[in-house]
Image (cartoon, rainbow, N blue to C red; front, side):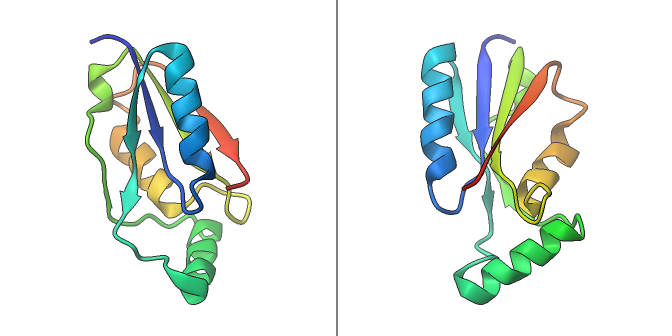
Length: 108
């Protein structure tokens, strides 16, 4: 176990830039959290905001195990004042595996 993992979720790529900048400064690794394209288009975006508002989760995929890192930084947009469903799913799946973690929230 060593180093920093920067896990991020984005729809408009704004959080991608933030995640890579943080990982560069902390000499960490970057891992993208992906939902299974459930929130595409205008209608999908609206459904995503509703799901965030009602604190729902969704099916996701990611590559790296947060348990293998000393610290995890999660970079995420805010939808309807909450975490997007994909980030909520990631957090629910991994909260017990992460020793140290923090969030960077953006207006993606």
